[in-house]
Length: 213
Image 1 (tube, rainbow, N blue to C red):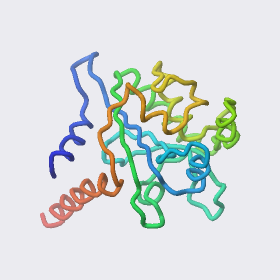
Image 2: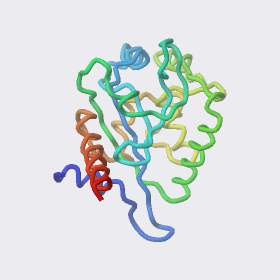
Image 3: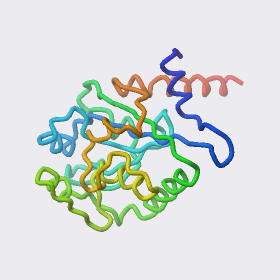
Image 4: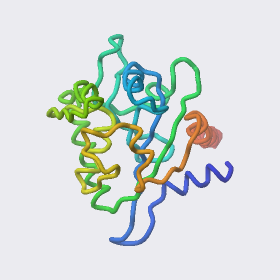
């Protein structure tokens, strides 16, 4: 699949042994072209204005706060994202993406996992922190119970397990802040389709082989 794909697959493997073993968690920045990403881009002027957290390099398990599939463009909140439905641009343009890896220990990994599971079971109780987004240009940290914007959510996951990946309180974090973090390693940059399609193709090949057998 090529050297770059091999490097991404290797990025999905833990390192070390026993208590010292470390596990990868991915931070994925994208330009989705949605209403909320456009709103954020108006003041950040940054190219990538949506951020998600993922547990595998193929992006089969991705979570964030953002615009939900609905006829109402203002329907937003916590969601498990699907790449084709939620991250790829609907206008057919390349979906520019940057994927970073953060290595964490076992306790931190399981804390983040547990937090996501709790939120999944209580998804309806969470909402999008639009006031928090509007407060950032004025240096206001607007924190609301069970309400987050995308970068606040991702930063808070790490903050809760003792990792401040961007050196700011979660409520002040913008998506572009992750790009300058010294705790993150860039493992992919380019069109999101080029990242996920080789994995999908491999799954189709395995599926075809299983049917043939």
